[in-house]
Image (cartoon, rainbow, N blue to C red; front, side):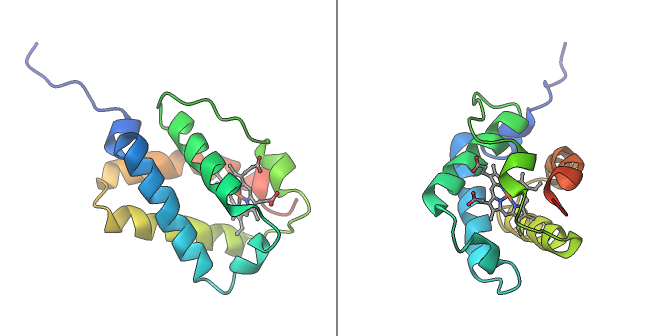
Length: 123
Ligand code: HEM
């Protein structure tokens, strides 16, 4: 068979180091977004960073097991809105574009995150 196997989403995102860089880039975007940064004022950022990277790794088919709280548990009481969700997603897109992640891989990741909307917003 001469066809190449489809790379896993995890591989397309750059594996462990690629996902670490995407997570750091996203945190940088959040830090500079006055419309959402306040949600994170009581958050242990190093812990959040590690859990988000772990979750993206697991979601994309990498060798990680997410060890954090469920999305409902961790977002209940934050009173997040659709605008907050959209801003975070747009920041993620910006970071993936900056890192030249293939468009198809960007969409694969976004499709995995989209169903979390109802677990995160208006909780
Ligand atoms: C699909 C979208 C999202 C994903 C995958 C996600 C992922 C996560 C993860 C993995 C955690 C850590 C859970 C834990 O502490 O055990 C977390 C916590 C948190 N998320 Fe999200 N999140 C999403 C949307 C959002 C949005 C839109 C906001 C606000 C703009 C947000 C704000 C927060 C905050 C403030 C915490 C920390 C809560 C605390 O300090 O305990 N998240 N999120």
